[in-house]
Image 1 (cartoon, helix red, strand yellow):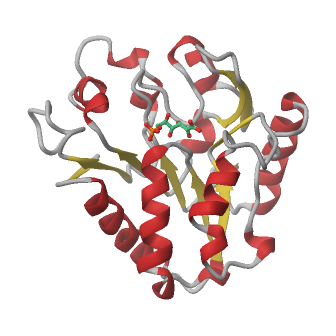
Image 2 (image 1 turned 180 degrees about the vertical axis):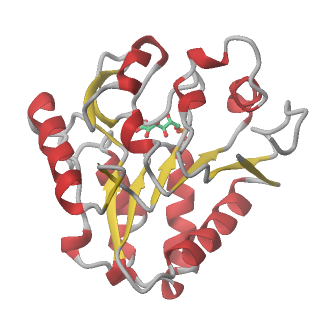
Length: 241
Ligand code: 6PG
């Protein structure tokens, strides 16, 4: 795992944008699973406003790592957030956008999206392979929409599952471990002091770390990068592991 620690959120956003540009400069389709949450919001703003001309948008295909089961017009929708902060500001072909339909029946949609991944993505070891999966991490150690109380969903035999948010009861469609860990590269974007405690437990593999879904992120390629701001990294003793 590689740790990249920057002074603040804006710096994380700038450095992640440069990293994405370098990774996606392949002259062919580049498949990305996006995350919801507050850190991606600023990353999308910076990417769209400062680096848009450096990205070959016709080759970028956008998918989601998880979606809240709400309409695409709802303020809770990860798709809506991405339209506002990224998609509406860049010249990406509409057919390159593969959203999870949060408005549909969750079980049916989890199945449909899993099949869509089988159809659209190249295969590696018999499973769909993203070029890049972007993940956030919640204060409780969840990632995508796999929460600690449903950690068994991580090892699901399916590409996608329906998860339930522990406090609100909101249903979510989420990628599972077999897809996330089959990606070529996985990048965590984690900022803010409220993340520091779990970042330390997970990165330093302290007692109980396996209770947190984010600990199970381990791509087979070993290409895992954590982009952190100083606040999220403040309790780390190791700077690299
Ligand atoms: C979502 C997510 C989720 C998110 C984390 C971190 O849809 O809620 O994809 O996994 O990335 O909760 O969110 P913050 O960046 O807001 O802390």
